[in-house]
Amino acid sequence: AWKTFVGGYPNVVLSMVGHSHAHRVVPIQPSTGHAYWEMMTSSLADYPHQIRRVEIFDDDNGFLRIRGTCVDLDVSGDPVAEAGRKRGVVDFTSGYMSDGRGTALDRNVELLIAKP
Image (tube, rainbow, N blue to C red; front, top):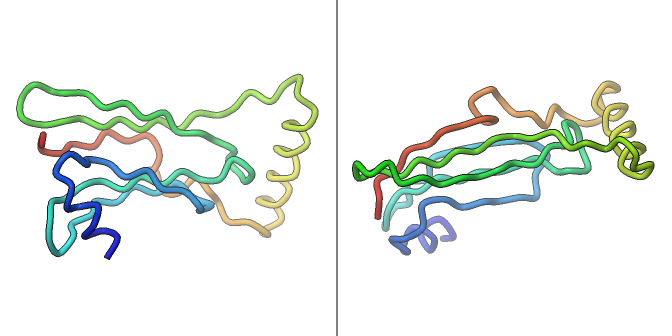
């Protein structure tokens, strides 16, 4: 129902979602409405402790280009952030948490979509 609701708005080209522990990018084609991209970014609290920069460009050819770039955070000089990163790495290397990087196709991406 949510995908159909979002796809019902012709100006939506990307849905940013959270509440996950992994990077993920998937095309969404609802049963009615139009297609759009869904981009999920891993939690800052977990390995790999990254944010995602999102840019949208008009290619001036009937398509929009969506660029998503994963960016590491500089935690040097911040004892709380340093401690959090250390704990996240321990969780990952001990097998407690999964690898939040996702696949190579889910990290640094350039996506095309027809211009609404």
